[in-house]
Image (cartoon, rainbow, N blue to C red; front, side, top):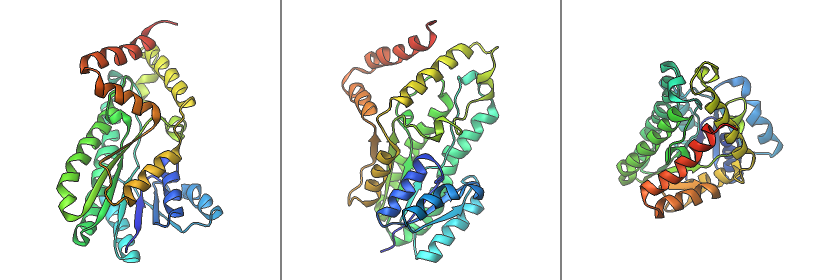
Length: 285
């Protein structure tokens, strides 16, 4: 049986942890990086753990490059069993502080990039009548949050895309799963933070609120009990379980919040939960 799995955005954070974990579990992993000079970030830990893992260069906004990567995997392994859509970018800032260019860029990567990779993989999975598509979304694809309006919009879009696609391809033996991580400490909160230029402008009417929201976010990251390995394990389940679930939420805090949202009347939850964060951010310290 073909066990080749493509993991996009695999040189940092969740992608790197996932690629290494899947290789440990016996999958033939193809880990992609946007910049070839970053390859050692995944190759070095793979060598240290004696893992069989191949790194390929991939820009998920380049359709020709995506097709080349899929063709390479198919020619080397005889098929494509799984795709983990992890690559993407962040964009932090209040909506009015986001430029049109910044918003389009985050949609190109997170939404259209995910769709392009998925489309290319389905060409090989559908004739084989088997395959697993995993899309890493976020709890930000289940509930919006201030100062990440555009980013959450892309994650909501991924959720809708994945839920619809799951129904379309299941008759071909292809399963789609959405993995929804809570806040986790990775490079996304450091070098890959993705702050909009306008959000750093002291003249913005949202400037002080944004600074406070970032401080609060950093506190949540620092105290988060969820680890990248938790996400990697959920992805492994989506790839290996006989009957994978459509959604895998990762993180005890997130599960608690959404349990409350499930059982409380919608307006009451929103009034309590959203108002709490608005007050935390806008109240002068």
